[in-house]
Each structure stands twice: as C-alpha cells, then as structure tokens.
Length: 109
Image (cartoon, rainbow, N blue to C red; front, side, top):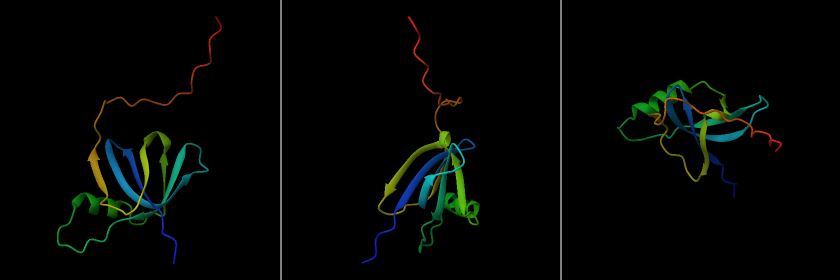
C-alpha cells in the first residue's frame, strides 16, 4: 500500500490580502528568513460552479515551481488530511504590522 502524501495548508499575508493555499511540500529555505512552498494543489472541481478567488489563485500560481514566502508573512501552516478550496480574503486587523524583534538583553541592576 503506497504511503499517503502529506498536504499542507499555508495561510499568509500578501499585499493586504490573506492567502490560503494547499501544497505538497514545505520547508525552511536556504535563503535566510523564508519558507519554501512547492507542489501547489488546487482542487479539481467537476461542478458547474466556479469560485473566482480560486481561479485567480490558480492563474497566479500556474507556472510557479517554488514560492519563497517571508517568515513574517506566514500566519499558519497546518498539515491536513485533504485539500480544500484555495482562498483570498481581505486581511483584518491593524494597519501597522508588528515586526519580530529578538528579546532585549537583561539589564544590569
């Protein structure tokens, strides 16, 4: 029996939008501060109803072999049992993004 392929749901910010994509491989990049995402998966829908957001994502990532996403843009990565529809939504929250800083060194008292 063949081993099941892993499927990952990646949620990240891009130009004020929240992207939700499904991929077959995710790993830390050799480029410092990036995650590599490969094998994008888009559900093959047999119905007549077409989701315009998913079609937009499909066309945007059609010829992409590998995508490098900055760590600070990643919201969440989940390993899931099966893929769902890819989505784009408006990002909700404050207009100012917080940056991750290393902890401050302890002060001498």
